[in-house]
Image 1 (tube, one colour):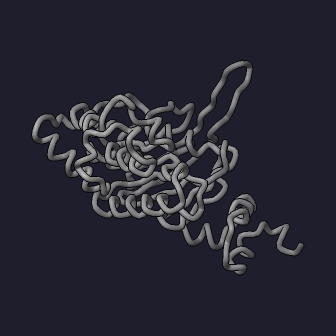
Image 2: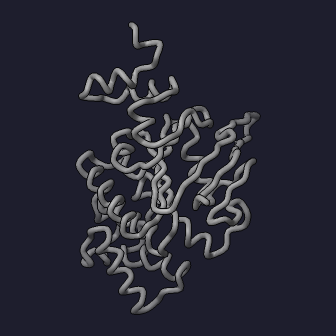
Image 3: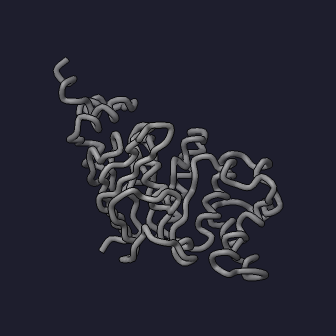
Length: 266
């Protein structure tokens, strides 16, 4: 049994006389210690699906289980400990009034019941895990670089030792060099913690480095799914091929495989 199983998940938003079908009948499986990348353009529904998994949106239809238990019902403290999220913009997701120490202590106290010296040790451990010196405990988010802020956000997500981390475009706001180091960090942390990742991104280069499975979304539906190399190197769906063709590729043979079928003979 997969750690996370989604079947027929849908999400509809209504308001101002409009109805938007953001997610339409999505199925998805995610195993422990593995990474599924949700790929698609803006508005494809990938972030909405991630927020449903993280408990931030309520699904309009479908079923979801996490560890064999219903994911769509009421969330207790154990469920909130088990599923954490890292957001796209770290500065916006970190309380600007709190130093790093308090940012990391808050989930430890609320979700793991750790306080005092036990929390001190865990904060030091988390900072070490994400490659930050303990001297940063007293710094405010505004005193950190973008890469450092995202490392703090990752540490906060890992604080209660979750089984699943939803990562919503966690590298898109970072410089290219910093982006690579954060991806490497996430891979190392997954090997260490055995947490599953639902990784939401439009960056194909990041997908190649971190994903085990790829799910391509288009207009709220799954256009294509499969192992990373199968989807990225031998795409079957025309939308996937168009998506990949827009990515700069040095190897002309790989680029030819990514072209939509109707463009191959032009």
